[in-house]
Image (cartoon, rainbow, N blue to C red):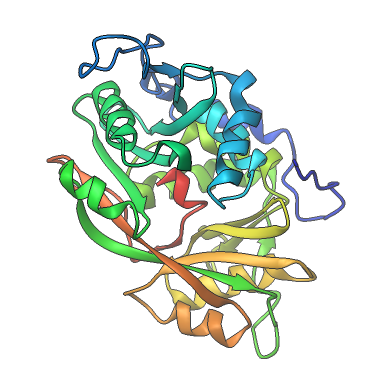
Length: 325
């Protein structure tokens, strides 16, 4: 079931942000090229029984149903965003049922992420996970690619050449603001977007204009952290997925700034919160645990390709979602 949240918060960003975003990285529209729409027959069988095809919006609910069958949840809002900014691929069985998915999200022509690699339980151990990921790799060509691997999927990605470079720990719970510093950040406005986009480009190392243009409508809250001179040095967002709220991305010059953003984003939220943080770096995880957000599971951040991972991991404290790299 898709969860929609009324926009009653004063922390929402002015919709006029869309107009400003058009000025950010004007060449991004050309860089965010889509993959091929064709199908590919299984070389092992020589027929189309396991063809990979580019999915469309009409397949969105089927993707959610596959996620539910694997205990991932329907996550219709997340799938909807991925259909808008990425390329969703799928495999169907002979009866037309969706049995595997994977998503490629491009950030320019040289970098991207892979996510939502799902295989129906009824078709496990038949090579479908490897097959659909290989198809995505073919579409991505020579790009450097990152993904977040679950413990169950890590061996598959290692066989395909991915290497670990970090880990992310999902923290879930009801946020307890006791002792946290509040009121040190401000709601983002349309006038902030250009600075925000430049900061995002600096920290991620790639243009993410297609994603940032959708952030104001996707997120319930977007807040910014400013220096004494009034420059934006960090930003964060809160968005909702089914029965919980998620905080991310969180970009800040240090852990203290990340804490301030998270505290203000979580203000008044009574639902369960999810926050994905670096499991090996700073002490943000310990702080989150002290405020009611307990570790739920850990994913391994992996990379494939000769190029360096462009992200500034000292300032990137939490991704928007693991599905976006």
